[in-house]
Length: 358
Ligand SMILES: Cc1ncc(COP(=O)(O)O)c(C=O)c1O
Image (cartoon, rainbow, N blue to C red):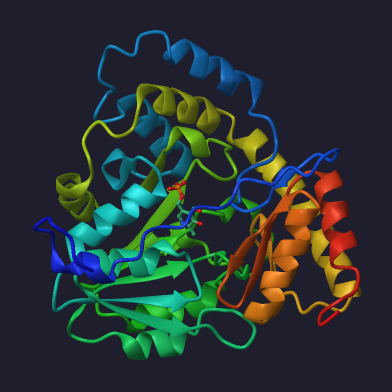
């Protein structure tokens, strides 16, 4: 890369984020965007009202400490307010973690394939990316990840349920893993899709933060809460780590509208969870339908399913979906389909009906 500007060398190897495509709109059919793992349900009416009320005066800066929201969320989770910090989405919080832990000479260990932002964080900081391949059943290979940690590891990222493949980490395997990680290495457990998870053996990250102070949770209001457009997420971490993150997180990045919406959604967490489980039921039906057609679908615990196919098959499938008005996400190793309304799911099954290799 050559440019006329004096930029950091690390940018030469930093990929730009590729967003999910909008759905193509072939004439006469309704199109659906199933490419960004958004919630397809309408917002809770009380949340919409909170948004409208908070949007009245944008002249003022938002509360930089998100006071009301922090206290409501801390009470809901049963943690101290000092354990909680908000950012403009999980993505900004991940960035704050990278700024706090990574630089040239350091490395970050993460599962792969997983969230596309992880390698980008490493590259941007000039740090070494240590992607650890998933197992044959698309799960984190935690023994291999533990073995990849060395004296220069600044950050370990875990994703449960894993985007884009779907399985959740199991409690016992996570516990065993954490016991092997040096206690001064920050481990971020990305739980962006937590509310959709129905695996009874899934890890209880919150409980493990009490035993392992180097374990931090990353959560977002973008998925189950349906607030992706407002940009708000948070971390639950040791208070000493939260203090350090306050140096790297952008001040005023979380708007008052986002804070008000999230506060209302926290008050209605029970409703949010019911809706997330409805999404999970649609997901389970889709998984069953795809498996009946012969597809090898990994355990799906989030609001998407993963079709592991070759890059050529992925390209032709993506084109077939697009021709039918469905935007899905083609990623290295497969196609990820977000859960949407029933009509969209039925159309998915029509397109995949021939099974793999058709
Ligand atoms: C695994 C994972 N983590 C974090 C995020 C970040 O979400 P947001 O920045 O919208 O909170 C996403 C978004 O797709 C994700 O898939």
